[in-house]
Amino acid sequence: MLITSYLLALLALLLAWPVPVALSRAHWPARSPFTAMVLWQSIALAGGLSMIGAMLVYGLSPLGDSLVGAIRRALTIVLGNASAGELRFWHLFALSAAALLSTHLVFTLLLTYARVVRQRRRHRELLALLSSPSGALEHTWVISHPAPVAYCLPGGSRSVTVLSDGLMETLAPEELDAVVSHEKAHLTQRHHLLLWAFEAWRSALPWLPTSRLARQAVNSLVEMLADDVARRHARDEVLVRAIALVAVGDPTDPMRSTDDAAVPALRARSAPAGSGADLPSAGFDSEGVDIAGRLSRLLSPQPPLGRGPTGLVLFVSVLLIALPTVLLIAPGLV
Image (cartoon, rainbow, N blue to C red):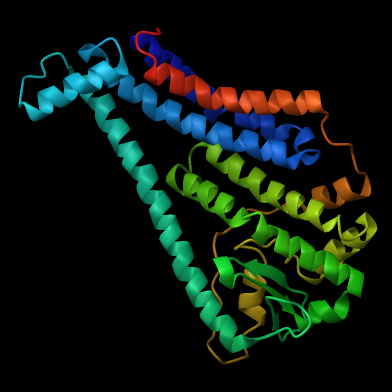
């Protein structure tokens, strides 16, 4: 059991610092954003499992040779009000830390979800006052403002894409189609769920490099995934012009959608002067997405990863999840 806890602690340390740092500096994720997204999710899940598991296994190590057996012994002690003389101070400290961290992560996840739902509800109510349905585009609302604004507001069957009339006037029809395809890709691929999970991870452990780097990477990767969908409906040069025009019109890059993008600009510009209306962020406060990186991958497209490298990355992703799981549940493995 002690060896297991040490191995889990080592894995947690690797996934907390050198691994995410190395991945954040790699260039291949721009070539295969979906594969990179899977790897980032595996790093986050395996890191959290290893961190909690290391403390749990260490704390229960005096009670048995396997985690299952030690948990049974612990339940016997608690339910039978028996003596726990085997457990010393550091064992109890580790168990308390594991329980507190688990509770903190779950509570932060639920709290983040509640905040997002509340802000989306308010945002939707204000949109009903400040926008009108687009007659030409389905599930699309139009804000009256000259600045180019485009984002999406998730909500299941009530999901909508929001555009400004300034955007519709600035972009050519094919460029507007590219923007709309980009925004709808965020909704159909449920990118808001990914951002919710990684934002909760960041809020729960803001000091952890994994959480900060993962959120930055995921913000960029979802934009690349949406760009790739838009590329099926428009030529690369058309999409580049659309991104550039929107970015120049608003330095916050309104094409960054999925809950958090363009909303600051919308908040400042969409409400009539003196109305007191204040559109909140529909979701998360996001760290900046690299617009230059998005444009670069479109202007100088690189081939996606081959089957071999893609299979290797996916195998590593599965291995990262399987390793702490096996260490925790396999009786007497180490």
